Amino acid sequence: GELPVLTLSPEWEQRLIDSLSRTDSGTYLAVDAKTFEQLVSALTQTCQTTMATQWTLLCASNMRFHFRKLIERFMPQLTVISPNDIPPNLQIVSLGVVGQ
Image 1 (cartoon, rainbow, N blue to C red):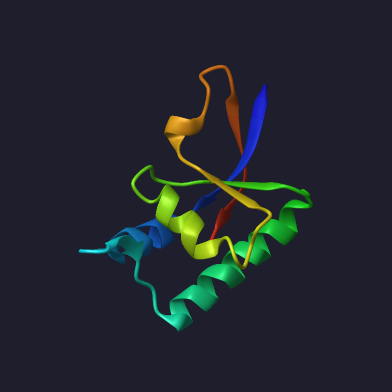
Image 2: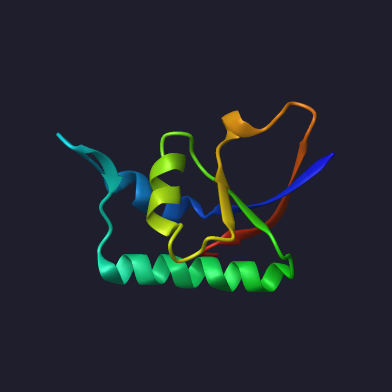
């Protein structure tokens, strides 16, 4: 089978990895409001161009959980997965790159 996914541009992925913040109370993505707005806007734009009804974003394993936490209130229809979540029999098909 095939799994249609969106991916983050290398710039976005790097920005988010750089914003990973580790504290005593846990790890989270520490992005400012402006960056978050740009991210939601880029995601929305890419989702709208795909014409799909369900979107899956493929991102780095170390970021998946934190990215999901950050975005779920604003984009509940977006599923966030990492390469570890993909069964070997599924082929990845790119629907688009967020932020390009």
